[in-house]
Image 1 (tube, rainbow, N blue to C red):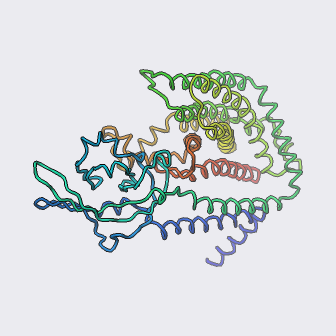
Image 2 (cartoon, helix red, strand yellow):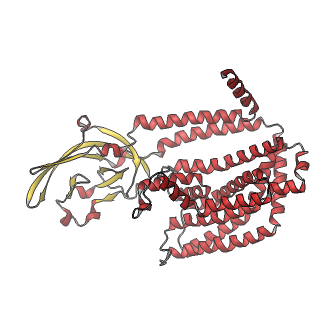
Image 3 (tube, rainbow, N blue to C red):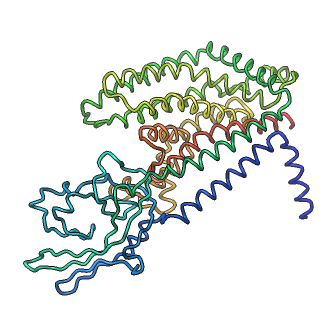
Length: 494
């Protein structure tokens, strides 16, 4: 049995001769990713909250003690890695010094004084760290950072009910220069992984027979699909949808930046482009599914597929050519509508970061390509025209409209209390919803646009690190394209 399994594995490996370098590259990338994870686990405390929860507060007579179960860590420095949950604030936010002076804060473990007012406090995954200086303009909420913090013991006095209380408190402290973005290490690993992937892809492409000729065939098929698709009545109607809906939403979101609506509320500059990406996905995905819904079924009916297969063209080339052509049919009018929507939004409101504008435009096209290849998988699998339409409509409804209901249903099944008041703001629910969003190309599109409104990819998107959102937006179209080619090749064999 073992011998048979080994022989079967060898035969499959030989059958994938063309893609062997790329598969090997993925294996090496996985190994590098394990090293990356191990680096953080060995060199930093990646769970600051676990340390914070070891803190104990005792009150005896007129003495208060706040200490950890780490006597050997006093005056020792520990490197923590985590997410800035709240904006680093100065203690001036609690009120004037003359009012707060002498006030004891059990959460921070200190007594406010003039000296403390010159400093600030951060919350790192729930753990409070006193920073000896100001972080204003240096770090922002949800950024993933490393902090070299020292556990020190301080003594204070404060008044309570007319009595003077002595406070002995163990506090984590750090200097401003002890805080760094985690990306300074991550970028080294990401660069290595990108280089390995590029080398593997290059070597695999070199193994494709008549690679240049296959590219010409793919280009020819793409142009044919593009010209044919633009002339269809459905595309004329969808283009009007693009013009009216995306442009109109751009104008509305720009207007909401200046004045509040009783129904829609107000909109921040960064939030407006994320919302515009959602509306772009809703219409763009509808168009992508509509133009590709009968791409293979029509070929079967007209018997033109056999004519195409009679030429010296690979099955992968046919699927790639169709995917590119259909993506252009939707992508070109969508791009024009995106430009117009951005123009109205920035003219009426404020201009979002340039990086987010670029991400909105480029990843919008990637999103359309993803939805086209996803629908091609359904179109190849369906045996009748009605099945194709039902599959496509179901996919669009799932991703664009009822996704939130799906999240709520799954959350309820696994035991999340969705009946609680304001449960949407519960950190556990937000983390669950964000991670589930990686299964939806529309949510991923919003994630990467929102990611690019920040200055770094070392961002926690409510439980999803920025690098994972970028990886997902690349893997989705590749997996859909690979699945479509596999289904098509299997159909031609069977």
